[in-house]
Length: 211
Image (cartoon, rainbow, N blue to C red; front, side):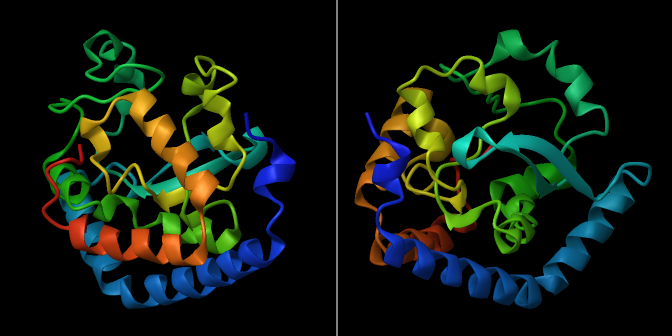
C-alpha cells in the first residue's frame, strides 16, 4: 500500500509538474478560446434555459472536495434523473457509465466523443485543484464504495487525462482503472506525463471509447 509520504517524496518532480500545469493550462485556455465560444453558442442554441458550464463536486488529493468544471453535455435535470438509471450501469465497481445515456444532448454526444466537454478543466488545473495528468477525480457517491486499496488513487492530484484515458477509457472496468492509476503513481515522471499528454492528443478526436 502506498502512503502520502511516498508519493510526495520527489519534490523536484512535483515542482516541475506544477510548472507544466500552470503554463499548459494558460496556453490551452488562450489557444482553445475560439472552441470555447463555438461550443458555448451550440449548447445555448440547443438548450437556451440551461447553463453552458456544468460544475460538480469531485474528490481530489487527500480526499479534499472541489468543484470540477465541464461543458454541459446533458439535460439540465440530469442529476435528478440519475437515480432512475443507476440500475442500468454498464460498468462494474464504484463508477457509473451508460453508453446510450438518455440524458445526453445532441451537442453533448459530440463534445463527449471528442472529449471537448473536458476542456474547462484547464481552469481547475490553473487553480491547482487538478493536474494535466493524473487519476480522474471521482464523484462523492463513488467514494463510499472505495476500499482502502482503491483510495490510493486519491494520494495524488487528479488529472484531466491519465493512463486510464489513453488505455481504453470507458471500455475498461473500475478495477482496471484503479490498477492503471496505481501504475502511473508508481512510475510517474515528467517524461511519462508528456508521453501521456501527447498520446491524449492523438486519441482525443474520434475516440470510440468515450461516452
